[in-house]
Image 1 (tube, rainbow over the protein chains, first blue to last red):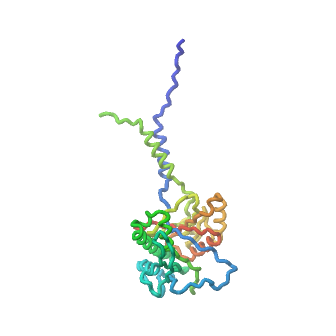
Image 2: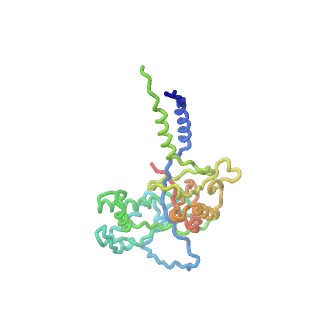
Image 3: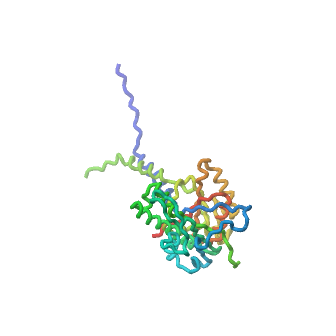
Length: 197
Length: 143
């Protein structure tokens, strides 16, 4: 016996497009496409209260590059006034010490197999950054940025001469080797209050 | 003129919809401080949003200036805070993370470019005390 088929009435889907459109517009509006970018830094461990006031780590004077920013955003590197734009070259010269200058950081030999055995590197250099309470944040970021740029350029140069490609394109081992060659040592000194209010 | 076949339009729209749904991250806090990022060139991307806590510093928005004054203030979550509350905030944020993620916690400092360093230094010292050592100074690309 042929049963009469009852046809299920079709759902009217002509408005799906509109519904989807509304949802789409909602998400379009709430989306914030901005990817967060910034300068990544690592803070030093908190000071140990038991530690003696005297700094027991004596850093030789030639190994330290003092970078100071005062409340009027003026920059002093070592003992001279500099413009922010000159800072990168100065920092690069300090970190790499290409001519083995006696006033620039001393070099130690270190075995880095990937870079061809013994290398003379300025292992103990420190860039010490000091700022005043009144320094503006943009000036501070400018200085941080230049210092990071100095490291990045040196690392890039090294990557090009040793591996023939940019630092970014090196594999993890190569990056590690280059980082050992140019360790990033920016110390943000304990804040000091210079006179004033 | 032949009619344009629009039967696949809903599918197209749905695809777009899914795309936007995936990349959407809804803003969790309403900004109460004016924030204009400083500019820099050597930027790194901030990965893994779930590991990141935010601290905003800047001048209060105009509607809050009557109450809060026009000095730079710190904003944690949805309210204004003092520098000594930062430490508790970090502990709280850390509690909310899974244990495996805790060592990788990053604090993104969204600081207005006209802020004075005094308040920034205070916050940094508080972060050090709370052992939140990975920080990220939020900035925008300089053209």
